[in-house]
Each structure stands twice: as structure tokens, then as C-alpha cells.
Length: 285
Ligand SMILES: [Zn+2]
Image (cartoon, rainbow, N blue to C red):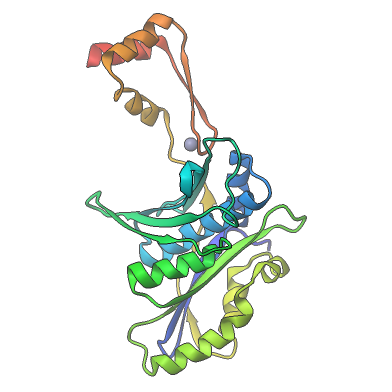
């Protein structure tokens, strides 16, 4: 059966490590299509999307998360959202029209999740020189979450054989002989730093990735979940946004006399707002 985008989890039977691995090939390609990206920025978007999925699945499966790479000097930002229902989306904002480049431009990585109280839990780290997002994500986990983890993200998006995915291996706090276990795992993961070709060889199967990483170690599969491209824009959200405008601004739109067409920057969906609906807003407010 062909692989579909999903997240798999497993734990070593000695209780030392948990792994969360994701295949995000189709989701990433849909985001790249919707954002019309190519080259390095397309790969960066794919990696950031995988990071958002892994972050949510590792830290907050039931919460909405957002990850932002913000380029210094107003050069723009890359945004990836991951939702508990399994959908994800992404956005490139570049005020100049030129795609920013993590390999050259200084950037920060911000990770945040929306708590049930609507408060935000957030942390910001610098993206290391050279633009390695896996490293930035690890740094975030260590500094902001105090969790020792080993992370690798890999994206081949423009190849004939596309594959996008990644993993988080977490040292569990209750691990006995944690130091020895960590040393063994760190050594083993040396050959999993660069996983792009490995992903291409297995259609980015998260099952295969976990079997390779935990090879020879007794482990137990935990639950899996599906991932897909999606967006939560809707006519209702568009109308709600319009209610934030001043009365005079709405009146101006009514006077202009043309129905509005409002597009979603994330997914490209377009929403029509008729004059009668705008008039409805005026009489409601
Ligand atoms: Zn949308």
C-alpha cells in the first residue's frame, strides 16, 4: 500500500526513549503549491511544517501550534500551523517579494502553542548559522522545554521522488542509567543526522524510520495519527474579520458598490462578500 502522511510513535521497553516520527510529503507539497514556492525556501517550508507537526505531537497533541521563522531586518517570515484535528498549513510572508534565505540571513525560530485558556506558551531561539532548522528545533526543546531530544528533519520536494519527514527522539525523565543510554543513542543517531536520502528510499515511511532507529532494541508501538493539508478559513471567519472594521470603512465599501472578493493567504481559497452582506453588518452594528 502506498504511504500516506501520518505520525507514528514508539517507546523503548526499557523506558529510556520515546520517538515520534512523521511523514509529511503530501502535506508539504500541498503547502508549497498553495504558496508557489521553489528552491531552498520550498525545502525550508517543508522542514518547518514537519517541525510544527512533530512539536505538536510531542508536546501538545490536543493544542494548536504555530512555528515561525522570522528573518532579521524585516526580510519576512515563514509560518507553519498544525492543528489537533491533523491538518496543517503554511505561509511565506516576504514584503520585498524576494524569498529570504536561512543560509545567509539571520533568523529566529519561534514555537508557540495556544493553551485552553487562550494564553500562548512560546519560546524563541536563534537559528544557528547556516540555517539548520533541526538544530534550532533541538535548541528550543532544550532551552524552552528542558527536554533532551535528538531531532532530524529532511525534505526532498522538487525531486522526481519527493519525500518529507522527520523524527524526535526524546530521553524520558524517568530513564534509569540515563547517561549511558543517551550516549548509545547519540552515537546511533550520528547516521540519522541527514535523513533525506533515507526518506526517499522508504517513501518517508515513519514506521520504517522508527524500525531503523530502534533496530535491535525492544520497543513498543504507541498510537498513530493522520496528517493532511488543510485550513480553517471560512465565510464566517471572513465576515467576523469584517466586523472588526470601522463603520465608516464598511460604509465606504458599500458606497463603492462592488462585491468584495477576499482570498485566504494560506490556502488560496476565495470568498465573495455581497453588498447586501456589508449592509447587514452596518445595520447590525
Ligand atoms: Zn484558507
